[in-house]
Length: 397
Image (tube, rainbow, N blue to C red; front, side, top):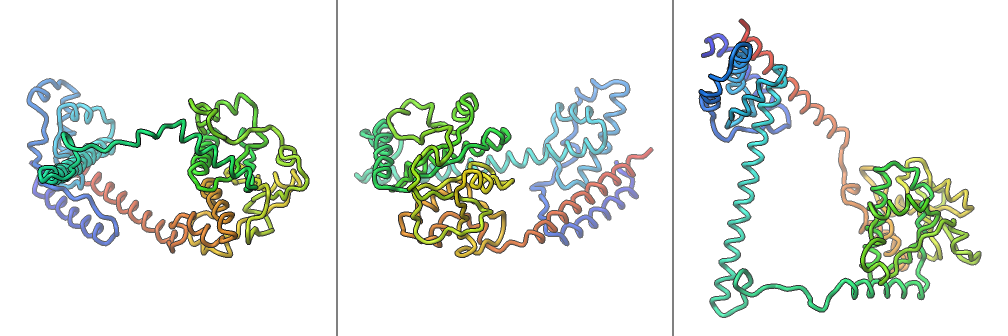
């Protein structure tokens, strides 16, 4: 057992740590039930199997663990022989404390998961019982051995693709703006960025198909065939599907925007967040160039200048009070804005507010948030330091 002086010191340190925790905004993880040290000891067989230096190491770790159980905030509720074996493999006291806290945290997560699953299961049983009552009363109850919901038997992917393709074809005939997605920088992007951009292109195509009035999308300045095939397969999709020939997908071309459309009468513009001119009012442009890049190096503005196309930026500052986060719209959101502005005849305010995440439109004090995070981290570090010092002080020979 611990000496009385050590117990007094440990108890005083616990009270001091409680005061620190209450003064901070962090919420400590509270033990749900008291765990006795004796119940956490390994089996007799495990203790007998230890010999020589390993036995001395175990006796030292056992003393440390006793103090940890008495003072620690995250204490395991079970310690198997395997856990004790892993404990003896830890090289330092700090590693052992981290491992014990990891066991406790993992166990509590499992408990919360079990409670959540039990709650969902009970909720399902209640719902099933209600449906059974409806069924017994002669109504239409849904569940096992009752009525079943089935999807539309007339719906199939081929028909869906045909409908989506017909909507795009109608937009082409009606003179909807053509969106030129410029890929000239995609091959220079890193693997992570190119994958993220590919996923965004997939959402662009998907949401364009699902809209009532889709835009006409084209890919220009396409990269090499080898890179393009791999990029489409891993990130974009669509072009490798079974029904790829039953709909109208965006075309690919190695030509630039002007060369691809080859019509000097078309009103062509390029979107860039760094442009001087502001795009406002009804969307009357015939072709809108969009640079597929993360936008860290003003690539869109340089691409517009090289192509000799006038660049515009969205009128975000006129209609939106952007309060937090970087002023950047993902490509699916950008296309949704253009689509809504075109169909509404120039309602930029509504289109922007419908497609900008609310986290950018609310007041958030980022500096205060960072300060609170730093304070919580310092409190945690101080608690770990005090716990380590108390264990070392109590286990010194």
